[in-house]
Length: 299
Image 1 (cartoon, one colour):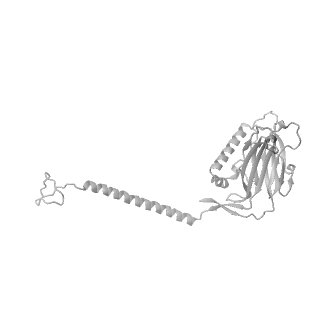
Image 2 (spheres, helix red, strand yellow; image 1 turned 180 degrees about the vertical axis):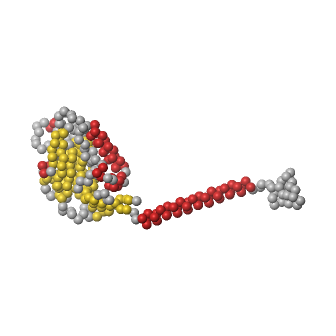
Image 3 (tube, helix red, strand yellow; image 1 turned 120 degrees about the vertical axis):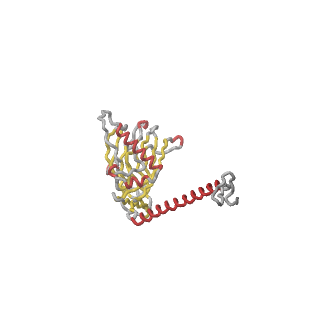
């Protein structure tokens, strides 16, 4: 029997860089607490795209969102994903199967950025002054977002997230807490990062006291602890001892139930026999069936 074991510790490479993998339908720059600016042109590719998904892509997104909902309900399913065949699970958005002549109405950004292991902010805002603020639209869809080494098959919390902006001055915020994770299974060994996220969105209205800039903001912070996830195999002797314990428990329980059942049957049988009459034979062997007597009485 195989099982997953998690241990907490402190990471040894605190000063190294972490790789941030991005794949969503809009994008910009990173600024961390060390005042280091990472330009989006260093590792991101901008592509024109159609925001509406094709039927095959919608089915992929629906399945991904279904997995996300199950992971939120049953956290132990993450162990199943860790032990599964990672390459068999497609976590990338499939290409469009239709040759649509519809013009591109969105910008797709994919690639990765190298950031320092300190708290930072990945923000997506308007890069140039636009004289028509009503043209702002920060509706977006996150196909994949991960930190550290890219491990195919692992489902991250923001994968498959879709947000539709109903106001041109809408701000979307994601507060991300990253935990360095070492993953060691029989199929793969990787240094990756798990993370949890808190989402918030609001409309910018300076007259109502809601200040800020419309856009998408991902504020991330790294934990000082490290989690080690290891797949371990139960030794044969331990499995044999547990098996003997189970078999012994079955025999013990069966014997106890048999004793209880026998005791109940004897009580019922004795109750029916209490006060019963039995004919007593004479000395010559003749039995008088007309006058039933108690067994202990004499004729």
